[in-house]
Structures are given as C-alpha cells and as structure tokens.
Image (cartoon, rainbow, N blue to C red; front, side):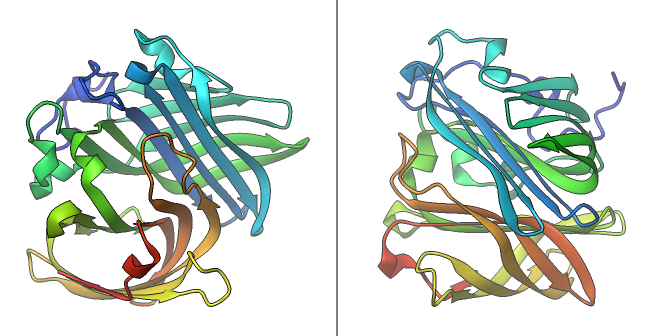
Length: 318
C-alpha cells in the first residue's frame, strides 16, 4: 500500500474507499460506478453496482456498446442480499469488485455466459469529493447525509463479448456514493465529466433540489492545477426524435482561478434507467459523452435527470 495519501479527497480518509456502516434510512445505499470509452477499440463500458442493506436488495446495471451498437445489457434491481451484508456487497451476482489499494487501484471481474472481463483501474488524480465544494448533504445530520467522490484513472485488461475478445487500454472514471438522505430531495441534475487527457479534466455537476435549492459542484484540472468551479452556463438541446434524450450540451465554465473555457458534448450510447430504481421516481439517463473543448476531443460521463417533462430545461446557469 502507498505510504502517502496523494489520492485521498478532501474530507475523507483511506478507509472511505472501503465499505461503510449502514445508516438508518430505509433506502440507505452504497454503490460503485466504473466507466470508460476506449477510442481505439470503440468500446463504451458503464457498470453500476449497489446495495440497499436495510431493504435486503442489491442492484447491478452494466452496458457495453461497440462501434455505437449495444452488445450487452443487464439491469437487475432485485438481487436478494442479507440485511447484514458485509464485504459480500462487492461481489454478489456476476460482478466481483476488489479494492487492491484504497483510492489507487481496483480490479473488476465479470463472469456470465455472454460477457466476461478482467479489468484494472489505476488512479491518475486525487479523488474529488462533493464535500470539497461544500455540498450541503455531505455534512448533513444522520439520516440526511449522503457522501460522494469521483476519480479519473486508467483502465487496462480484456473483455470477451459473445466470444469476441477485446483488449482495453483507456482513460476513464469511477465514483462512489453511500447514504441516501439528501439525495431523496433531488429534482434533477446534469453531469458533464470529461477527462480530455491525464492533464486536462473538466467536471461539472449542476444539481436542483426540492424547495428551489441549487448547487454547482466540480472543477477544472489543467497541467497539475485543480480549482473549483465558480460559474457555469449550459445550453441543452433536446432530441426531437427521443423525447427524454439530450442531443447536445454547450457549456461555458469558469473556475476559482479565473480560468474560463467552452466545451460541448453529445451522448454516444444512452442507458435508460428511469423508474427501474426502487427508491427514486425521476427520469434518469446515463451515457458516455463525446466532448470537445479548445480543439481537444475527450470522452466521459454525460448524465441527466429530471422529474417531469416541464423540468427538461434548456438553460442551466450558476
């Protein structure tokens, strides 16, 4: 194990990349998210695994696209797990997650008839916690608290889909959450998270909550300097053919150091999870976005949520 804490985010410690004590909420949740797009293999990979110990349920969502075509999908929200589940929350169902070194290295293995893989994630940056941006629910009282961090890293390994094997070597992302609490008050959000290169990353999370509360979290990381966002303006173009899907996002963001940039994003393969979750009732769609900024192309998370069709806003501004 590394002797330093270079990858540990603000407000957390090394133990926070491990499993957590279950909270009191009926839908208290702990979840792991791993995502990448390999531009050489043209493979889009997104997997989310989580547990609701107080409800005795687990979930797994995994999608693989190749050359823009869906090759594998699994969305199962009703795994039966023990309420006192411990480390087994990392390896129920076909996915086995293994923390090799906290905040630094993870291993992902999958064993099913149609899909198998063995992938490693190696951190490139210090993880980013929403607590660093002083998001209210990070420090809320027990029962309302929900924690989150995300991290950019490098994926390597192999994947076999329907007998076709692919080598993976790609820049990508992972994130973690535990708790529920304040997340139950979400009224919608937009996430733009684009690692253009190991030295250039943009991270934007624009969140709306019940009662009109709004908050912007995120940063610009460039050439070894990472600074929190202080403003953002995003224009959303909704698809005319797919009523709940985004066609394009154009954004301008500024960080606390005064650095400002424009970026655009368009979704590649879109994952529709709306009203499958047992604990939430919004329209929730995930994707990998193809991003452009200042002549540079990158691939990263593009996620959006809204509760009613009237809340499909066209402009978000902080």
